[in-house]
Image 1 (cartoon, rainbow, N blue to C red):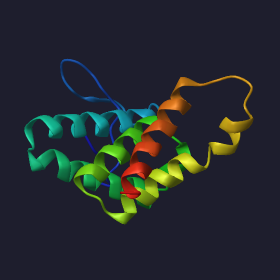
Image 2 (cartoon, rainbow, N blue to C red; image 1 turned 120 degrees about the horizontal axis):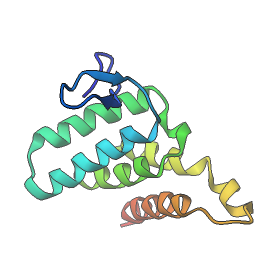
Image 3 (tube, rainbow, N blue to C red; image 1 turned 180 degrees about the vertical axis):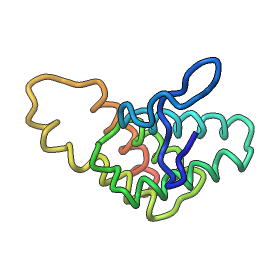
Image 4 (cartoon, helix red, strand yellow; image 1 turned 135 degrees about the vertical axis):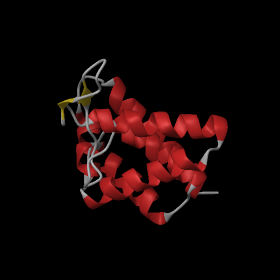
Length: 129
């Protein structure tokens, strides 16, 4: 579910589906969008793709790339397969770029950063074609 502004409602109560918590953690939104993209890959219902595009408009307007969310990296990669628009590529690049120095100099590894960079790599690789 989404708010009037285009943001997401994060937690609903069961069984009533009453709003329990408007916001819980930033990563819920990337999970929701990635799920819609995977559903679109199965059934090609434009409803899902249009919802993802609408959500990405919200993410771009609100600088969500600053969160460096690996799920948004997956989503940007997937979205650019179906809608190869500059603004989605730019978002995906910004989402990854802000963490590269940290990742390079970090002593330990983070699986989520590997996922983030691999999704960005796949997106960039398609740009090179």
